[in-house]
Amino acid sequence: MLDPMQLSIGQVAERTGLSVHALRFYEKEGILAHQVHRGPGGRRVYTQQDVDWLRMCIMLRMSGMPVPEIRRYTELVRQGDGNELQRLDILKEHQERVRQQMAQLQECMDLITYKVGKYQNYVNSIAAKAVGQ
Amino acid sequence: MLDPMQLSIGQVAERTGLSVHALRFYEKEGILAHQVHRGPGGRRVYTQQDVDWLRMCIMLRMSGMPVPEIRRYTELVRQGDGNELQRLDILKEHQERVRQQMAQLQECMDLITYKVGKYQNYVNSIAAKAVGQ
DNA sequence: CTACGAACTAGACCCGACTCTAGGTCAAGA
DNA sequence: TCTTGACCTAGAGTCGGGTCTAGTTCGTAG
Image (cartoon, rainbow over all chains, first blue to last red; front, side):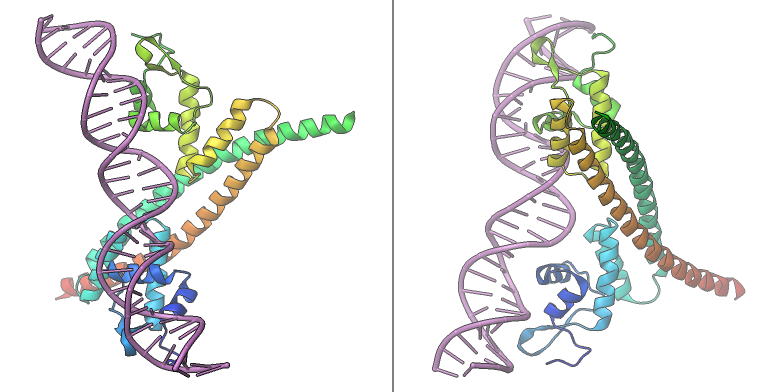
């Protein structure tokens, strides 16, 4: 049993929804703000901070930030104070991309909604006819 | 020169933003409502309807509908009247997915905006100090 | 003791969606 | 005639983001 603040890879997988494979993959890709500490037998020991960081990375991934860019951001954080402007740049750029993505998605949604409406009307009218028979 | 209503693959590529490769790929994948007519020399001849259909497919793809599902939808349309309920199902299901996707994206956006705000404040405060010197 | 479950590493494999290559046809212009 | 450029087919290659396998090593429970 570990200290309650010390989490095994499996526990982190549960808590984040990532697979243990994905967790090791992310680590290899340099996506952990502070490199994972190893416990007895060379096992990874995560902290709550690691989990929080991973959750943010998950958000970035979900919104389409590519792994290499998350790595760049992570590296800046790892380097410590002094590069906040660069971090801000990355975030702002991504924010803009997400904004565009949402706009696009809304456009698609409008088309789909229009089509759904049309088919719904048609299907309803057929159903009405069937009832009227 | 073709009849103005007859478009070559290159023209369709221009008009849709898809590459000629992608157009052939989509055709092979069965994503064309009515199969492309061939002109002299076996060349593809597209109509405006094809372009319109492609534009819808592009919307579906952009919003994350996988190619096989677009194919299923396409097949229903190709079969003609009588399966409107099935088409409606596909569209509604996708609509729901897009809705979820947008909600997720909004969540990510909120986090990013929060972080951008924090870094912006910090960076501003540093800048203010520099000026005050 | 032994068997189990969870962890480890390195590296192979997979999937979706294109993208590109090789090798060829054809028509128009210099 | 020769070249250029757009098109053709079949099939190989690429890329991102994981996922899975093989072969081990632990620590604990029966």
